[in-house]
Length: 146
Image (tube, rainbow, N blue to C red; front, side, top):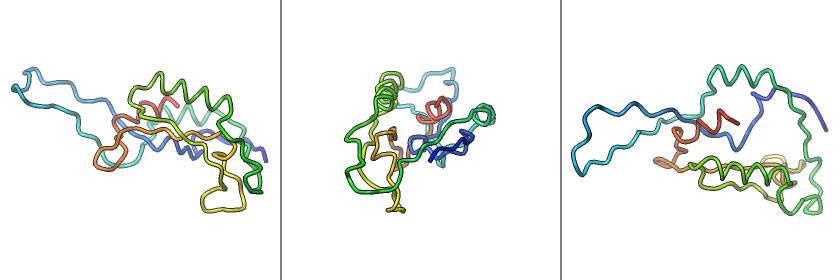
């Protein structure tokens, strides 16, 4: 099934990310032996208004993966396009610790529909955790770009 939809409302597994720019450093350096790090913010990714404005103007064609009919419909690996996005992401975003996503299975919560993970069109982008949660400060820049 194909349909056109605004880009912003799409559910992106790889976009469960958020972040911000660290504050400017103080004029005085910290005492010797002190480790200074930005503190990660808690919560989900908040799409900035300028990013949302651009996304709302874009239309994409969504093609689902069809009914689940077992493993015979699975691709066995990523599509060429997904593989290229994976490689580009790893090469250009040093905060990304890994990119995965291929999994031969139906959609979680709906065993009647094939997951786009099963046909190689989904990517899961991993960033470091802070206190067991995604480090928003590292993820927002990438999420906003995508």
